[in-house]
Amino acid sequence: MSAQTSLLPNSPKLNEFNAACESIGLEPGLAIDLMITTIINIKDSLDHSRVQNQKMSREEMFNCMRGHFKMSNDFDEPMEDFKEYM
Image (cartoon, rainbow, N blue to C red; front, side, top):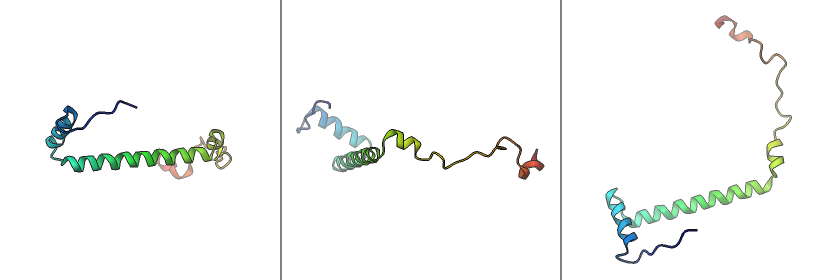
C-alpha cells in the first residue's frame, strides 16, 4: 500500500486532480464516482477469481478436460472436402 495523500482544500494533489478533470472536461465529483465504481468492480472481480481458484486445485484445473478430446489417426492427412482446392 502506498502512503495516503491528503485531499484537503488547497492541497497540491487536490489542485492537480481538479486541473486534470478540467483538462478533460469532467466534473470532479463524477470523476470520483467513476473511480470508486471502477475500484469496486476490480475488487469484485478479484474476489470472484479467488473464489473460483479456491474451488479447484491447480492440478484439477489443468486436468479437468483430460479425455474429452481425441485426435484422429489421420489428423495430418488431407481432407476429402478440400481436395479440389489443392
